Image (spheres, helix red, strand yellow):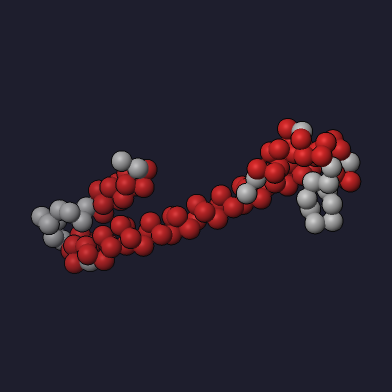
Length: 105
């Protein structure tokens, strides 16, 4: 079971929408909207979580690229990169930092 499935299960438990014997107050409203709530938890929420996680992954990747570029500049100087942002010299391309930079998405 994935972490997302665990989250949905816990939210259903919190909302108690699978307990028809609770038919008073806010539970009456939740039971009346159980279909909408289930649809949101199982479909819409998943899309929102995936979008949020992909944005964070992109930010993390961009940060790592900047950090690697900074380390390469510190070690090899400003000329380590050409005008397009590519590694300029074979020596830089073959070093550990250069290899990590090349493999970044």
